[in-house]
Amino acid sequence: MTADPAAFRFSGFRTGKTRERLAWKRVRYAADLPWPPPGASLVLDFKAPRESSLDKLTVSVHYEMYDRIPLLCKWLTVTNGGSKPVRLQKFASEILAVVESESVVQSQAHWQRANLYVESDYTFCGMATSGGNQTTRWLPDPKVVKAAVDQCAEVGFEMVILSFGSGLNMEDPAPASHARMKDLADYARAKGVEIGGYSLLASRSVSPQADVIHPKTGQPGGAIFGSSPCLGSDWGRQYLANLRAFFANTGMTVLEHDGTWEKTPSMGWMFVPLVQYHGGGAAATLEPLSEHLPEYEAHLANLFGAGVQACYRGWRLYDTDATKAVVKRWVDFYKRHRLDRRFLTDLPVDLPAGGVTWFLIE
Image (cartoon, rainbow, N blue to C red; front, side, top):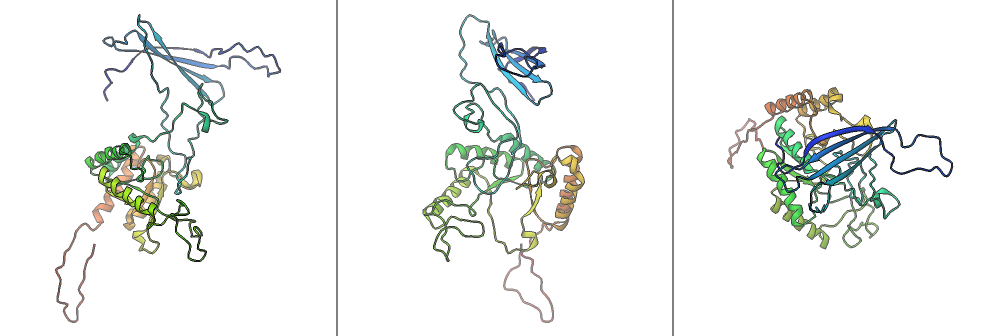
């Protein structure tokens, strides 16, 4: 790990108590509570490098934590000790690395946010933070995908499938979207890991003009999973064109779709809930993996021992060295015993009388 030579450097810190933001006069009835709310404060100071044109600038990061309440307050102050004005165009006061709070199949306009309440001095234009917070943005983090690729390469997993909440949208033809995915594809390829994603074709409604018509009602809808768009519609043709362009421009090689329901067991969509999927809470979740290692290993032994592929739904495969060792042991077991030879038989072939001829087809 190396420091950015242009980054501000830590220069000192100060601790203390919380401070009063305003003079509360208590004109009306209020509980006889201390003001300001008791707690602790911390200030971290950062200065620009001496050789920088901003060497007279100091950025101070202020924190306050309050007694007996899970609340953190943070703000920045910038002190210009130089003789020239400096314009601040924008800043990011906090980057919160949080795991997705839900993972559902159907497309929806708004995803459930992390179990955190974030509010700033610029929370306005709405009656709730979901619509009124003008400064908080929830975005996918490409570093999480690359970290998952790194773990796959470490333990021997061979494929990563990006799904809901990852930032992947194969239907988005924008060059910037393709460029982001190409960066991930190039990274995974260099690690020897295939990467692609899931595209929801069925189980959703696009429009009355594009949806499949039910043969009994003559109307859209009414299928087992509600509605489904028609691939022969204008939307369907554009959908397939978008997917072709996506794979051509990104270099990704995996497309996951909902498949047939008639299959052999090893063709099935087996599932390991590393994170919660469609509810169930902690009882249906293996995270934190190290705290549920016997249950996690039971999944690995069952699936790898039976030679069955599975979707390990989550953002990491291990969280400690002990967990990593268990995962790698079962991956190595599977790779030692899986059939990795291919046979090619030239036809026609003579079938001897009274005997059995075996053909291996892969």
